[in-house]
Image (tube, rainbow, N blue to C red; front, side, top):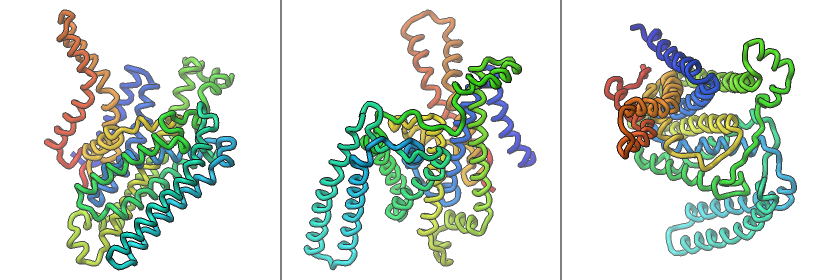
Length: 433
C-alpha cells in the first residue's frame, strides 16, 4: 500500500471515530474529544522533538505543561486589587535575593581554591542569604495571601488577552527547560529521566503550596476566554434564530459553536507547529540532530557540540509542551494544580509518541488524536461490555466485582494497545523514514 494512502487512511479512521462518537453519543462530546486531542497532539509533538529527534528521555512533561497553565493565569487574570502594594515588590525583591545568593555561592565554589575556606565561605553565603531572603519574602507573601483569601489571596495577573498567554507559556517552559538542561543534560539517559521527573514534581509542589502565586489547591477559576460565552450567545436573538434554522435549541447550539471555535484555534496552532517541526526535520539542523541521536561519539568527533544541541532541542520541545499547557488551561477556564498527574501528562503522552511513530511528526500528531480518543471512550465502552457480559448473572459479589473492575479497562486497554503496536509495528503506526 502506498505510504501516503496508508497515512491518510489512518487520519481518516480517527476522524471517522470522532464522527461516530458525535452520532452515537453527542456532538458536544465529540468536539470535546477533538479539542483535547489537538492539545494532546501538540504535547506529543514536543516530546517527539526531544525523543524522536535527539533521543532525550524526558519524563518531566507534566512540569512544563503546568508552567504553561501558570502562564495563562499570570498573563490573562486581572491583578488582585492592592496585592502589589501589599507585598508584590517584596516578593520580587525576595526572589532576587535568593537568586543572587545562589549565584554568589556558585562563584565562590568555582573561583576559590579547594579547602576549608571555600566551604566556610559557601556556608556563610548560603545560610546568610537564606535568612535574608526569608526575612523579605515571607512577610510579603503573608500580606498578599491575606487579601480576600476566599476569592483571591494571590498576586493576580496582567489582565492581557488570553491568547498572549500561549506563547508566554512556551517561553516560561523554555526558561525552566534551559535551567534544567544546563544541570541535567550531562547525565546518562536513565538519570536524566529521574532528574526531569523529580523537577516536574517540584514544579507541581510549588504550584500547590505557593498560594500567593496561583491560589495553590484552592484553584484559579474564571479565566478569560478567546471565544464568546455560551450564555451571551443564548441571549443573542440572531444566534437563537440561526440555531433554530438548523433544528437546534440555543443551549446546544451555543456549546457546539464555542467548541468549534476552540477547535479552529487549536488547529491553527497545531498546523503552524507541525509545519515548523517538518521544516526543522528536513533541514541540515534536523539531520545533525538525528546524527547525534544515532551516534553521539561519531557526531562529536566530527566537531558537533552535542551538549549544546541537546540543550537546544530540550528547550524547544519543552516550549511546545508549555504552549499546549496554556491552551489546555484556557479550554478548561481554570487552573487546578491537583489535576496534574504523571499518568495523564507524562505516561499517556509517551504512549502517543510511541504508538504514533517516534521520530515522525505526523505520527506524533496521529498518536495524540488516537490515544486521547481511546483514553476517553474505553471506560464507557468497558462499562457497556461488562454490563452485557454480566447481564445473565445473578446479583452477587462476583457481578459487583466485575462491574467495579470495568473502570480499570482504560489502563488495561492502553497497555494492550502499546504491546500490540510494539509487537506488530515496533516503529509506530507512521514510522520514521
